[in-house]
Image (tube, rainbow, N blue to C red; front, side, top):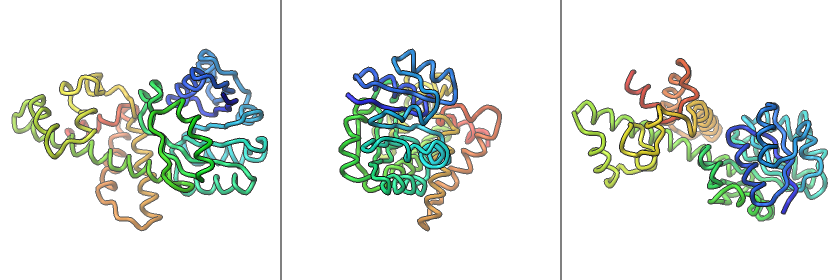
Length: 296
């Protein structure tokens, strides 16, 4: 078992820490929010005074942070973890950030002789709590090999996508597709509503037909057909509108840098942006985008 420094204890990071401890790892945890640290301590972690302290004696450092700027701050600019951790420390960044920053930070780590991977996740809060996350990893074969048993304590599906930044690239491609699919499913069910179709009967048929996709079969945006979907809980979030909008914006940054044409994703970004900007919609589950489509 490993000594792990974990930085970033939000809705995803907190449950991930609990699963690391459950599988026998020791964790020094830090977050800027005291309540988040207190929850980690309640699950068995040791509180660290700051990010550098969490990483100081760690064999592995895991970060789960909001954006690329925070990742740079922790590893390079402010906390300077890359300069202060011991030789041989493995660095794992599970934040969802831009590909460019991921590659830059991993390159700085490599210059210092440290192995690092980008390992963003899919599975939402439910997956973090259940330890069934999907990890999409970018980095060298050696770094991935060291990281895999650590990630196995927090996830069910662990993939090596390629070199540095490849995990982030897969993540933005996945969520680009998911956002478009959710909008498409919403439009289909709203059209069915206008055509006097029963939602359950529509779902029973199309979930076995060619339009079947995860957004419909597991996360249907209308109440009823999928009892576990957020639509049955007034769109209580598993993955928020704000988080999907963040990932869509990252997809558009990546598309611009790669000169890729993504017209549907561009429109999806506009729809999620408009929805997030209205009222308190940003904290709803992303499947609530059906409300934006219904009302527009």
